Image (cartoon, rainbow, N blue to C red; front, side, top):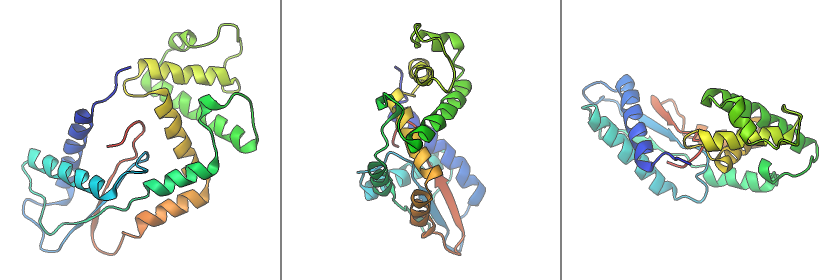
Length: 217
């Protein structure tokens, strides 16, 4: 399987942040200090938030330099860290990865499987995965195809793993689980949102987001 290298991810971030800065910073530094809010993505649990913030800031400086800009010295950087909080919610949920589910479970598990089926179909369409590629991953003894057939959904994910750059089966499944918990559990959503919104004040603030699917940056 081909995966996106760390260099590729850094280059992508460098130039995307440079473009974002162009919309909020003039050629000369502003007289009023500007606040920049970094919002990291999933998969950061166990990381050192200070190191992550440093990496983001270094990448920001590289991106600014690539576009002929300089990050103002009076720029205030906020980096709310919720990686460990999200990991704890995942642990408490006791929700297994879909490939680890071998039989239908309770209602919450059933809802998760339906959620994953919808996401798998959407990712499959965006990645251009064909029916033929899915059939290569599908048990020929199982005739029924569709979201109600768990093996069919798993075949879609395996096909994405095999044919889509950087999207491994385990990465997709952990991404889907994290998104499911955040979008369906108000306690999870409100807790994580509170970590971020605590850094939002009346001060003019630019924001950079990274909700990564398959790898930490």
